[in-house]
Image 1 (tube, helix red, strand yellow):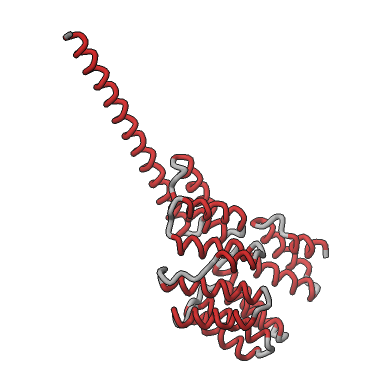
Image 2: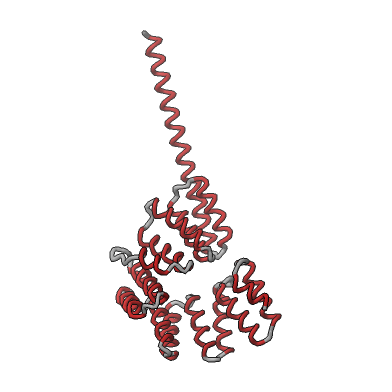
Length: 280
């Protein structure tokens, strides 16, 4: 009888020990993943997205259910012009329960970058319970999708709604500038772009559009300065490199064009427009 009791106690002790060891291993796994995620955040803040991506992948190897890491990886993929990978990671983050509004807006951006304008419009719906920035971002994104789908009336309403939620919101002002440019009102378009840049000086989309407006008005030197300003903020900006390269080709400065194309191909080696300009 005593031997049976002793055996039962031993079995229970071993089972308890196994549970404790698994719990400790699980905590270590989570902490290790979280530490790698925090390191990735630091790299991202410094602008070193390559290192950030490596650390995020390492974090997800430790814990594939790290929703924060999934979301940040998706955001960085969006920023580094890999929207398909971004969409995959962001949808995974959503399945893991990450902030619905933030994820929906980021997924919408990946769809827009892939030219999936109708899908973006269908999937990215207004979210009144989200933060004001997210609400305004979603409404502005919907406006841009509507603009791309040649629905200027609906786009105007979306941009106006975004500005009601968040006055001075740069993406909405930029959307209104595109609408103004579409009607031939270059002066109003430039006024709105300058407003957007005044509120967010680092807004590269606004900087690019400013360059485009100046270029359309044959203000070559001013356009080049606008594109150069974008590259100061984002040295790998695809749009700025392409615009400068095409201007160099048009002016016959092939050496300068080659330099821009080579800079672009380091970060976007399969860009078809870069290949076309290289051929020219």
